[in-house]
Length: 126
Image 1 (cartoon, helix red, strand yellow):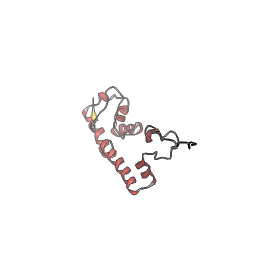
Image 2 (cartoon, helix red, strand yellow):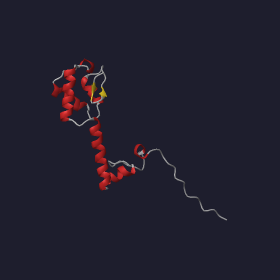
Image 3 (cartoon, rainbow, N blue to C red):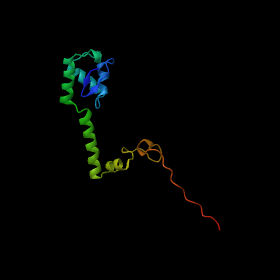
Image 4 (cartoon, rainbow, N blue to C red):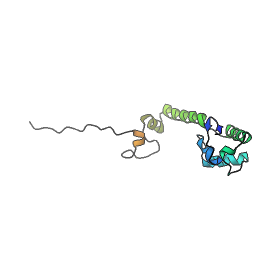
């Protein structure tokens, strides 16, 4: 299996699909990388030689933010939003949806499993 930026990319897939296994590279970006490196679009990842892998790695190094660096950048952005206490930062801090989704129902991914709140007890007649 070829290894780019510490990520094992699968041998049996076309190169443009295999590149999407790298965090931060989607389908469109992988097509642009292949065009910039002047590779055959239908070539499988296992058929790439060392020179072609080096060209891909060089292109990623020069023009793209991927893997660990991208993850650090995203977490730094979220931390900055939390520090300045803007609306989005407060939503991140509370673990609620950030982009305007409803929370009365359907926010279970961000809010976690339901926690039952005890209801009021009725007033008993003596």
